[in-house]
Image 1 (cartoon, rainbow, N blue to C red):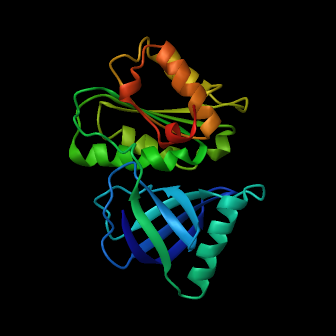
Image 2 (spheres, rainbow, N blue to C red; image 1 turned 60 degrees about the horizontal axis):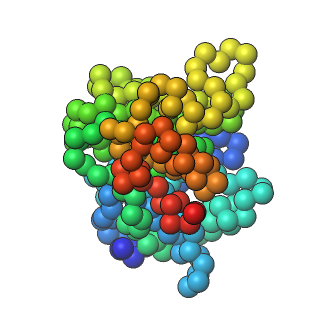
Length: 237
């Protein structure tokens, strides 16, 4: 873990409740794809957020924060960042946390699965895999409730177009009439597309209750627990 200060460069709305936060660390931030950071609000008040930027971007950190009125954890963190930005004051960060970072061996095909703003966790991995030239198939599944929540759909379609082995599959739980892609729960789309997950490395981010269900269903679908990664595993049975 690395403790650093960072300036808040910008806070940009991505949807009505999701914001991209751009931070400039005072010293180069060292982390691996899939790591998270903690925003320090106080000595005993630290808020964890996945790092959306890739590890080569050591001088700029990107966060995606979903801050609805019902989510005090994220809303208070976002307000802390806003006040720092308005007052030209740095924020304190603890960078390089987590145990579910990307394992770069490129010997196994990869499933990246995100629910909602869990997107930021696997976005860092997708961008890093592109940068290092991994040739294994990579399947990026992003599940949301409404199509309007696919705030980075165009960006990820462009990512998938860069290499034949990259695939982006958005999944909408409650689609509009014109939606032509996968519908329902995101992990069920994975199991529909892939007959067995035995040979895959799987990285997951989303609500803890969701990740527990996904883990159990994927194991029944052939996935090997030792090749499944999610920081949520430390908090669920």
